[in-house]
Every structure is written in C-alpha cells, then in structure tokens.
Length: 111
Length: 115
Image (cartoon, helix red, strand yellow):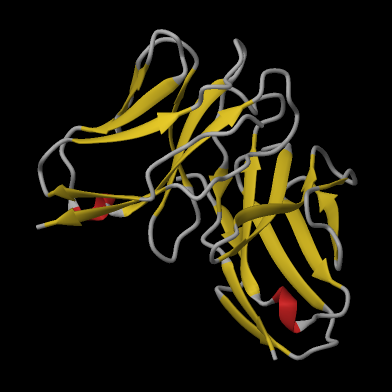
C-alpha cells in the first residue's frame, strides 16, 4: 500500500475543532483514503473513508485536497474521549490485501 | 451492535505451549484477519482468510497457523509459544470485496504474555 505521512502527536483543547493532517503524495487514482483511530487498550476503530470528494459522518469529516496528495480528518468538537492514535491509511485500488498501519498521530485532548 | 469478540482479554502461557486465540464475529463477514501490535512496530498482519477453510499468509506468519472451520470463527494458533510472541493480538473482520469501500471491525485484543 502507498505510504502516508502524519505528525507524531498533536494537542487539542476540549470542545475545539481538531484538524489532523495526512500527506500521501504517491497516491494513485483508485486509492481510497481510510482513517482509523485506536483508543487506549482497545482495537482500532473505523472512522471514515473517501476517494475524491469530502465526506461527513457522525464521527468526523474528511477533507481531501483537489490533487489528492493530502487529506485532513476533522473532529468538529473534540472531547476527552477522542484522545487516541489516529491512522491515515491508503487502500490500493483493486487490492485484496490488508490494511497497513503506519505510526499514526497521537491526539491528546486537554480539558 | 455488531461485534468482533476475542475469547480472552489477557493470557499468560509458558514457553513451548500450544496456544489458541479465538475470534468470533456476528456480522456474517467473509473476511477475517489476525494482527499483532507491538510498541514501535505498529500493527502487522499475521494471517487472513477470505472464506471458510481458506487462509492467506500476511507479513509475519512464521510461528503461527490459523483455522477457519466456520464463517464466524477464525482461530490463531501458536504451535510452540516463544517469548518473542508476547504481544497484543487483534482480530478483525470485513465484508468480501469491500476492502476499499467498507471499514474493518476490530476486536478489543488479547494481550498474550509468554513466560
């Protein structure tokens, strides 16, 4: 799977928006962008995914750059429960392979 | 709520023992996966399965085997446990043909310690 680059860590204040960036400059036209998060002592949890257009769901929004070389996961109002490691993953078009997790971004949320 | 259930949250085994880690999903998913997670190394795929009785090696299959006799159950087997297999083991499932369009559902993990 193509590589993604994320900051190691970020901090946010509770009830403020959080923008988690991801660079994927080698993305190809059929690669989907997936985001997962992992809370402490839990398995990873699916958050959102997209291909070209921005996406919204109950957990978050995904903003995808026009050239698709970067994307941003947006948490509209961070809560303490959102403190987790967030993984940005590219799913290769046509691949029957697996999710390849990088190191992710550790998000801390301050009250 | 849909679930992937791993039979044990914590497990302590002795070196040389045969260890079975069980995973059950109630979502009728075709695909199931076993990962291990270690500090600094992230999640790494051990084995996966597309269907009953089918299995594919992941990135680190050495020292492990798997069994999928029923669609809902995927077992990871450590034939002869060693201390370097001390890790967090995570099971996941997903719909067939949906690697791109659907997410994986993970279990809460089994923390295995081999002494």
